[in-house]
Image (tube, rainbow, N blue to C red; front, side):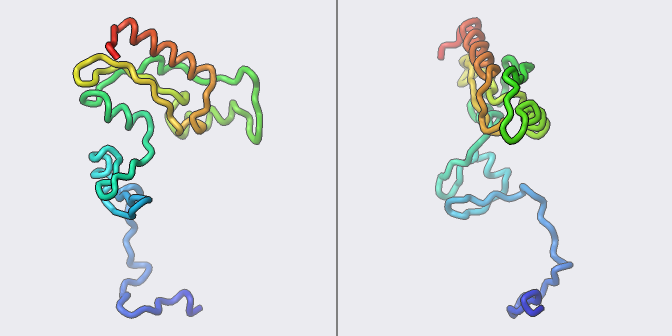
Length: 158
């Protein structure tokens, strides 16, 4: 079992003495391998401070960047995807919806928010890949339409 024993000189820490680092404490850029704390990465809007690699972000993170003071209200947040076609591939779509809602906290692939951008009212509709890969069902269309209605009602300039 020589492959299991430490062969290099200078390594004195026994495996059982090593401390576990909590998951998510550090961020390593997949492009340049630069390491910063996850908090610093978020403060830099999920862009690598070394090479400017843009990390994929979810709709909540996107809203936090765009809306003033991260203040917004969600439009049609109560709508939940259904399965009127009773679709099944490797798993039933109803099962996928149920497990994805539990895992992601999202009820559908589109999040719509009303808030202010530089003091002006705005509505943002943002797809979220965290919900079944951004799967588009009838709720996506309904939320988008309600977002447009809200923008018109609120007289959003853009």
